[in-house]
Image (cartoon, rainbow, N blue to C red; front, side, top):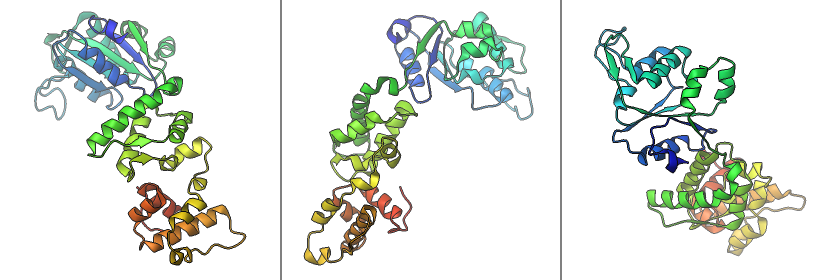
Length: 318
């Protein structure tokens, strides 16, 4: 759809939840278009009515208090290119009416001015609201909705295309390893399956941020299931404390002297035994969490998190 609509002059409305990649689609449309100007983006939810009006249409000197200079708005800056209006549902009714005129006439006046300015702009808009219902309730101008929704593109949530998680994850791993000067990191199949069970309410953006954090905090060449954020492990029904297993910890404590540091007693819970095993490991390396992570074959982030959980560290969790 992007390829087909890009070279035309048609206005596009991108529908999708947060984090699904609406701006990425807008940029793809612009870059595949025949437009020679720039892609100018504006988030309609960031400013109040008056500031949004000035930002979009520009203003003349003295138009209002503090308007010391004439200023071009986003419409003028996008002349010959594409104007991307994100969260267009957040525009006030007054600014919606002015936008409708620009769509119909391709002309407007700056705030405080009487000179009509003509523009050649291609419009791409995005929303995560049901604009059709809003238009029926007169919360959004019906005529504007019809003008903006010429070619609708609906972006699925990541949950709806969960089979893409491994592909996206692989791409993000490569991107952030390169960005942070690290060798390419791999991820074990169990961890991939866990990521595919997670619902991803923040969609692709949440997955991208998750992978970046894992790469930055990784001290190993392979990411294990225990390295995943605790919120994901909990949401997918995995008991985090069970991933730091007692046998693995015991085998990692390599000398009799260090094993004797373990104060394990009959009747202790698994969580208590894990705490004691981690305490002994940290003690054996003078509380060096990087060395403890190497011994236990987990990330330094995991050691920090578990140490904080067990009251073994005063450091803030990263």
